[in-house]
Length: 132
Image (cartoon, rainbow, N blue to C red; front, side, top):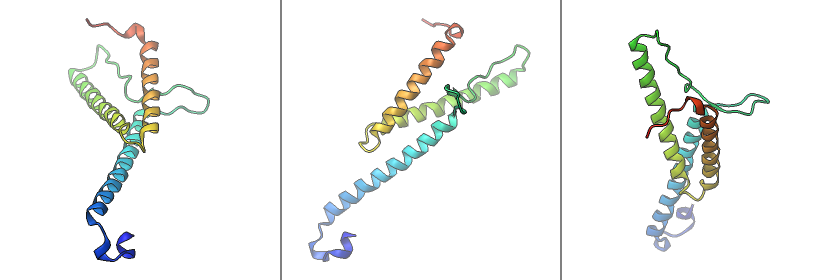
């Protein structure tokens, strides 16, 4: 817009380039955050009407003693890819906190996620074995 309204000799192209780069970074960060939100939503089962609890999809995978070894390996690989994706989403949320435009929403998502993880862990406490 400034390029069309000002004479070329009066434009400070260095300042214009810096401003343009900052604007592009902000738009890219907003787009990346939208992807992170969508990825987080796809990893969670959203509650139905009247249901208050969120549950993680594909987390409750239990191995029966009679399953074949191949199934166990496949399940473990699936869990690892799920954990890697979840870590990447959490890393993205922590990075979003550093951007002023995204900070409030990223903090709200992190707080909600941490609360939910705490709730899930405490509700299945008897199934968790402490490792020292």
